[in-house]
Length: 232
Image (cartoon, rainbow, N blue to C red; front, top):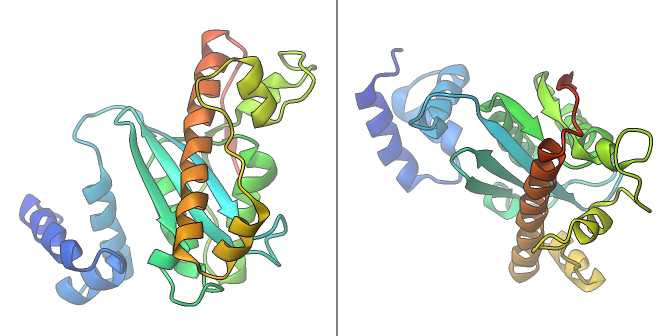
């Protein structure tokens, strides 16, 4: 199946009526494979300009352990378009425990970029995402160029501040946006599918992504990052 401009335009119309079941809708409409549907989605998400793209992202979860917890949402800010997309479980599953399609959607969108970046993403976000994918029998995130700014705010690699936590780094750098605090009750309600609580969690996730982008810019401006490695 050739992915022509006409196919792309037709796909846009299909997805306008099926925003929450993209891959399945395209497979049914075009009578094509999952692989081809994925390629169409990537073309739809592809920016009009030509050049390297960076996905700055963050995940919010119900627990720190991925075999016990699940994904609540994932926010991804694409550079240089600066388009923010948030994937949330209530858009992908009626059952709060079913985060398979959410995990796959986050994985696929991250993979549509050349470089990924997340704060403490090597220690938490990517291992958590890959574990959820494994639990559901899905493949892991593809290895890609990756940046994790947290390591350059720990004394032996760069800045010597009291803590490399995002909250502290944002305060020390005097960023105009600080890490957003959320009450315990909101987390509990979000875990049980409360939409208003999920809205707050998604706001926090997007805020963390914006803060990560600003910390990354500070890291690069001050030549703290010496190289970029592949991960995972």
